[in-house]
Length: 209
Image (tube, rainbow, N blue to C red; front, side, top):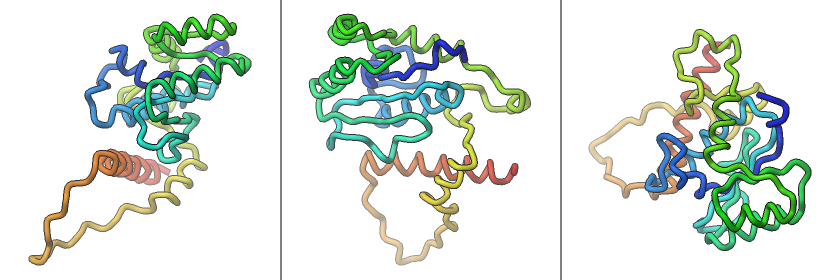
């Protein structure tokens, strides 16, 4: 990754997803936020700058502790107007090197007024994909570079995830008294899918150590 790209990025999440530049991610997906965050973590593993992504339509506004991590901070605003206001406040603060990723015309205009750089969605995706170098130890990997499963975890991150999720549970034993349960909520289902994927990835990493 070129040094000039190692700047703090402020990403207009749903605007980026809606741009159509991200293959396999759509605003129609129930877990579109989770899919984008996983993609950003892949790119962040070979990027020196911090990433902050802001989503609107959050039930509860504020930082998401569940989705934040790996150099990617996730913020939820309650509506699009609040998300724009949050991004504008960051623009007004003029953080050194800050670059806003959005196709929103009003945010781009605001950034220009405060001498803050902007990247359009296509520019951002191109920079992330073309600047991502493949480490030598990944040469024999069968996973496609840039895939959500191709995330490298440090020992500290591995320990943190193991403390959070623990070891994989034993397969449940079904009995005749089992009663069908209500389907999980959208948020619960997305979290459980992510947790299962992380557990599988951690077990794979542990087996190679």
